[in-house]
Amino acid sequence: MSEALEDLLALLDLERIDRDIFRGTSRPSLVPRVFGGQVAAQALVAAGRTVPADRPPHSLHAYFLRPGDPGAPIVYTVDRIRDGLSFTTRRVVGVQHGRPIFHLSASFQQVEDGLEHQAEMPAAPDPLTLPTTEEMLAQHADRFPDPTVPSRLAAARAAVDLRYVADPPFVSAGQVREPRSRVWFRTNGKLAGAHDDPLLHVCLVTYVSDMTLLDSILLAHGRGGWVIGDVVGASLDHAMWFHRPFRADEWLLYDQESPSSSGSRGLGQGRIYTADGRLAVSVIQEGLIRTPRAPRRP
Image 1 (cartoon, rainbow, N blue to C red):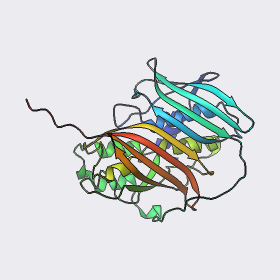
Image 2 (image 1 turned 135 degrees about the vertical axis):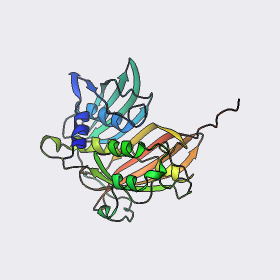
Image 3 (image 1 turned 60 degrees about the vertical axis):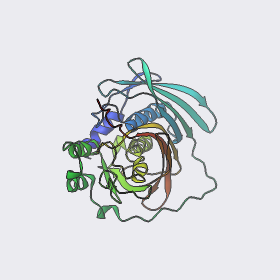
Image 4 (image 1 turned 45 degrees about the horizontal axis):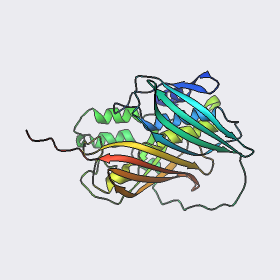
């Protein structure tokens, strides 16, 4: 297990300060706010710790209300909305400085058998034939106006082995492409012992799901993103449906596309497949996408 993954697991190991109240810390961020995937994953940890282990999460719906302060703890309060015969529902609010910054609703279900079908997994090259994020950033370091960004971006993603199938937006800025992006990912190390917990695997994929989902929007407009400085963006809401079991430490293909962008908002949707072709997760997110305004003339 990499040191970065150990740090991420510690980040998700929330402190329980009361029956339904948890406290989490943050890690340094590339932007002056808490990474949205971290808040979503921590909130799901808090919800999951109030639910029997035989009821895994099957969906979550969340809103990012305010930018999180990376220098302050986040307190998560869990509301036990419903405990039914088959389903359990939890509501979680993340609070900093006395104000809510995040809201999550999550539903959990007893494992059942039922009708089965799924969308077919798209073709993708073997992930081991693709460059790592660190290698890719080193190859294209000259693309970044700020020379510190490649090392900071690599450090922020060091807990995850993430490999792009095609050039990401910050490499292909200026080229208008199909609004579709695919990445392979897995944790940078195996989960074993106390860490080999089904809920933790789900929370880790929730964490990663916010890393690249808006890339397809940028590709449709030839934009490189905040790392290039040609857009300003932030996650607005996030929804996930967990269809089939998976492991976060085994390769997963994240197939992402954008059907629409308008009104300074863009919609990204994704499907996460296991390496053997099972559709494991569906994801939808709307993000704020603004182009920086030119400075006013004196």
